[in-house]
Amino acid sequence: MSGVPTSDVLTLAELEALAQAQLPEMAWDYYASGADEEVTLRRNAEAYRALALHYRVLVDVSVRDLSTTVLGRRVAMPVLVAPTAFHRLAHPDGEVATARGAGEAGTVMILSTLSNTRVEDVVAAASGPVWFQLYVYRDRARTEALVRRVEAAGVEALVLTVDAPLLGRRVRDVRNRFTLPDGLTLANVDGDVVAARGGDVAESGLAAYFASLLDASLSWRDVAWLRARTRLPIVVKGVVRPDDACRAAEAGAAAVVVSNHGGRQLDTSPATIEVLPRVADALAALPGAAPELYVDGGVRRGTDVVKAVASGARAVLLGRPILWGLTVAGASGVAGALEIVRRELDLAMALCGCAEVSAITRDLLG
Image 1 (tube, one colour):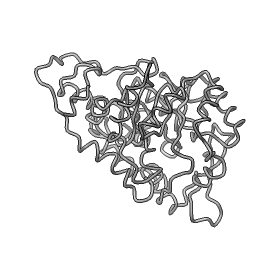
Image 2 (image 1 turned 90 degrees about the horizontal axis):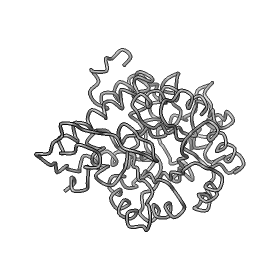
Image 3 (image 1 turned 45 degrees about the vertical axis):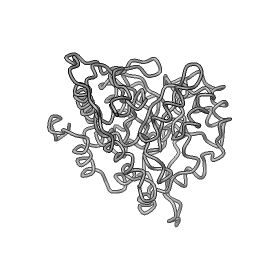
Image 4 (image 1 turned 180 degrees about the horizontal axis):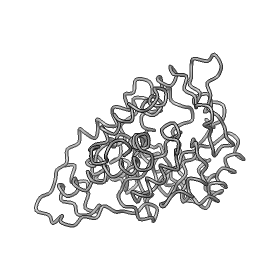
């Protein structure tokens, strides 16, 4: 990593501290903050720490295979790059660097609608699969045009965010009156800008953007609307309830992400790892093939990945730590963040008596 040998950065917490020292306050607060009192932000991570791993012994783990598949694609480990916004706040190469780092690590990058980089440029730079996270605009023609664009660019799935009819109140962003610096735009949405309204101290520029353009009337009908307009598999992201996960399955979702938006939407919503087993059980009870199940929020160690997979997830989505790596060293920092998790996961699997991902089962949680 730039200025810091990769071998010297042993944990994601150390990487986070390096990133905080480099980022301007407004950018750090935007990336790091949660909604309101940030209860859910803290709970996401604390809930992982509260789980114990009941490891197996005398299992041959001399050779280990961390790979798995997601939507039919083989990835090096059950860790994907979550969609996060505005990567050029962290590094001049922005989402292009993130795509390169994800490819080096052998995994999927999910590109945000709120990207500072054109989807075409991100896919061109990627050596692995790119999925696209989608917000639905009030102007459905604008949304459909965006879907056509990302299909043409070569993305392999759409990740529909369903937990943000309005933007959660992120107090740090309100205090900072968050806005994108001059020259940074939403590159995939007609070059839209995110700016605070003149004199309005009640919201950030991003909240104003959401309120003016995104559709608070979004419903399950719109999942069917989207399915009728794309050939791509749809991943529904933002579910914390078993019944909503089942509705997503009934609506034809190829996968579901248990997610509370990294604690950035409804504060005091449950930690994702707490609800994941119930969602997994509900999907498993459905007739026919169930959607794949992923989870995000609070993953900071390789042991967290084991706990998530044991709870029913096929893979986890890693968000903020990717931004910390991007800040510190661009593409190599992203790859470095993922390598930290890979090393920890490899060791955790060995110590749990799991030579492959399929051996990570619910009984490891007691």
